[in-house]
Image (tube, rainbow, N blue to C red):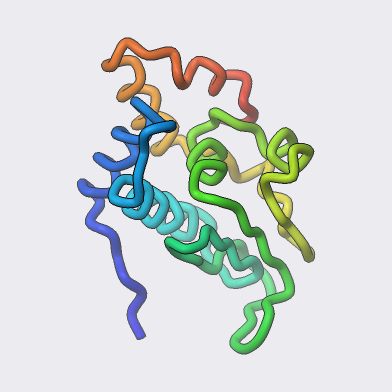
Length: 146
């Protein structure tokens, strides 16, 4: 089965919309933004050692290592949509998300602090927030990562 691909323009537009007003984001914005950023993460870090889940929107397998085919994978990371988008854009650091209990991470290779944020989504979110004249992404510079 071929994995579903989010239209890149739709996903990027949804991410930009989320970045301008995260509190107002609804399912129609969250779903494509989450799916797009999960797909980008899996492309950047291919593999099957970690299953990254953002229910109810999507899950991907990523990170090189042992691949699972049935049952519970050896490493699982699960979080909500807002936390994922904050992590991928750099508005929230991995350490802070874990300390606040906003991420459930278990198994080998489930620490994503070295992989997050992703540069592309971070740029999209910053540009959108800057264009809106909003300081929503101001904390991203200290949020951890590239």
